[in-house]
Image (tube, rainbow, N blue to C red; front, top):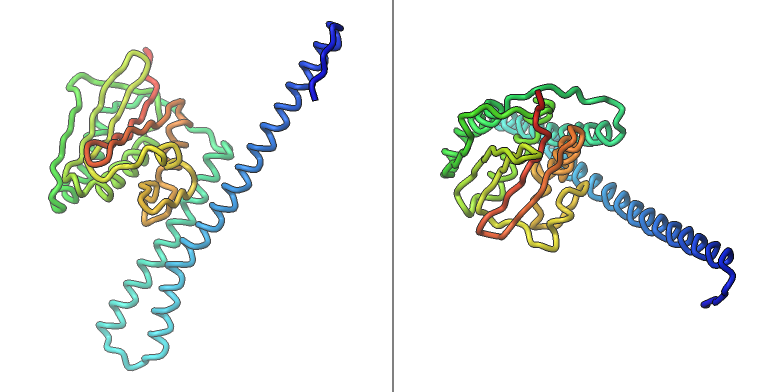
Length: 263
């Protein structure tokens, strides 16, 4: 219902009432979205935990039902049990890591970080995996030292997540690249590939917790769905961010933006 009045004070009051109503409506919508996100996250988390644990129980049952199993077969099955158990433990660990990041209980110490060396070292860690898988490697790192005001351990984890992701989802393009560059207000690290990429309608959601679109690249570690979420939170905890550009089978770029170190 529309109300018309010439009373200036009443009009001002109505304006404030409308703003309060709009604010409350916005809060209700955000709460509803958050509740749906939490329900989806719990559902996906339980599924991701159930999968390796079901396999573990199956192996254990087989071992128990076949006491005469050959020693080498038993040893091989125990290795599989250990591998699947580690997957479940890794998922639980990442949940705890994300919870700590979002609670902001632990401050992240920031110092001067020499990004040239950090980028080279992280690509070198994956070089054997890349070459064995038939990937070409494209590295563009300036010889001039580039420093960020950041946390080196957090940067290592971000790069590990993003390079792992590029290897897993960029195999169709057979190339993975890392570029370190400096902008006037930020230091940028681009991790890119030419694989299947991410459709435009999903690009804004890949950083959500446990986003589980079948073709989504958010499942960067053992299908956990937390690798990109943790990476983005780590970047934000350093005053930075991660941005995504993707054109399938042409180029997909995850850009980590960090604050430059000021002397």
